[in-house]
Image (cartoon, rainbow, N blue to C red):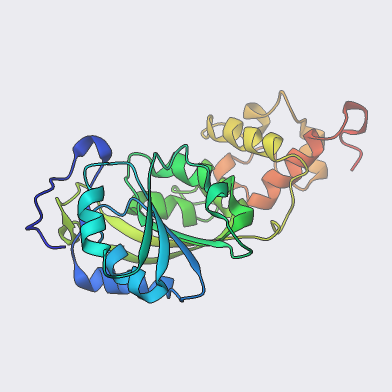
Length: 271
């Protein structure tokens, strides 16, 4: 869209419009959209990606919160295909309403950095109807999502996203590729939800709460941070070192712990 458009990015919406054609091309190549697929864009803004992807698929959905950009988006896309724009907050949007046939959704977008983490958790609620997701995020967030155990970036976000999805950091994007330039670096990530997690938590709510509890006190050993819900004996039985800290544990370790504490009281520790 360039920088000549009359709409100014709004700070309260976290808007930074992507304007670099090379990066736009790289994102489209990563998504590789096909006419038979159902694509959904979150936060299309002025259509930098939309105007390139819509002609490739002929029909797609877009979720845009800022009602003032929608007239420009319609104008730029009117001759390119059938674009259905949902003026809504993606954080509370019901993605079920987009499923009209047996096709799964392919979700993508340049996400506002101020809502990216809660939005990812919201999308995971619909993972059974999503085949993949491609997002531009703050580089630090991407690094946390793909981080491995024993690294400083490994966090609650790492464990939760990796439990639900195969994750892949694709490429970095400099601030100069946006209008206005953000204060932080950016990166593009691919998330592919598992049909079923590699290691299944019996109770996803217990698993999520356990992970949150552990990382809320990430400097403490799990013996100290989780002592109210799991004993040293149970940890040792699961081959987990009670002196380990949460950033030392694999996703499967959190699954094993949650499955023990999900059991009825009289069977805990028996496995």
